[in-house]
Image (cartoon, rainbow, N blue to C red; front, side, top):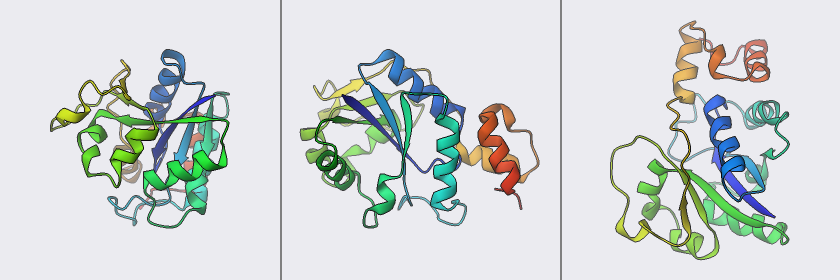
Length: 193
């Protein structure tokens, strides 16, 4: 079974994440997508980050009606900071019957050469890349790489930051979230000042 790992803080998960995950399931050879909720990305400020269990709950609610897209809290139990190379090694040891691939946006591929042990990741795992509008260029070594698969997915210009700011400024962001995710955010008064 081929599993695509889609990492993110999902703060909050929005329809853009689901469009990409669903597209990967429907138009690639992946059998399942695991939405891996990351405890804390070293590149992001922690202040606006909801607690891990709340973001996992949002992902759980968002993916409930998609049988091939599953929430994962695997990184919650791993030492901090989380490095993708360590998570991939851990998850591959734990689920020996599955092949794990990495899903990333084109913007991440542009900085992939800066990731910890990126060579090890490429040696053991395929990468599925979805298009993003972003500055910068893709390193020559990653162009036409046999383990890097570009998927012709829709470009989604929705960000969690935009949603958080919208809620804070009392804007209607409901169309950008699933009904279940919006209800939980609203019930819990998340992202309001």
